[in-house]
Image (cartoon, rainbow, N blue to C red):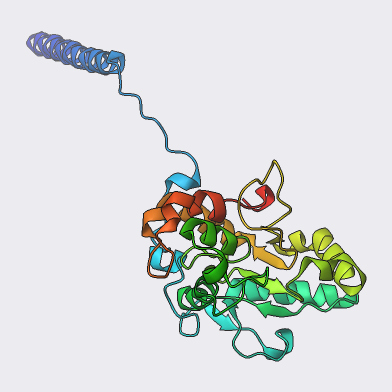
Length: 282
């Protein structure tokens, strides 16, 4: 009997302890739930997501690169265009990705009986400065056969005349290694014969290889920028990214270091010329 009584007492005590423990745990769990519920009911700050690549600065693209202030001959991302594709010239350079895509396009065009020739490729700041200042000072005639130093005294008017066909140093797409001029430098060449065949093939097939004509005819959809250039083609997988970075980071006030640079601000060269391109290329 004594042994039975002891067992009974032990069972009762154990049950009491178990009940107290469960009640305590229940309160703790309930309290935890209350804390979670309370914190959930507090109004959280609204976070506005940043969208659009134009709001993101790409640290791999420097302003010096965008403005052509480097030497393509020593830049690790550039490669020489083989003379056979460049009318025998050995001084044509492109980004490696651009060149690879061009070779693929060249092969396809060749099958169609069309030969693509790279007449101009990368031009850095220094090269563009030579072209620009030649026209500015009159040592190089404008496309209109004018000596602008004699015919056009007003700086802004003179700059705008040059900008019909030539970029200010620091603003050219040719700085980037993504753009090239093919086969001829006049629109008339592409209006008939071999030129028309080549241009027709390009308009139908260039996009398959990533290329776009940035300087389409000027109209209500492209009121600003350079005149139409049927010879100028841009490799979009790289050029679009660089265009976005130029829009984000390049300011008119940064355009400097050559004769007539003071007109960049009043003209608004970034918006009107760097961004004044065929919408299909944006």
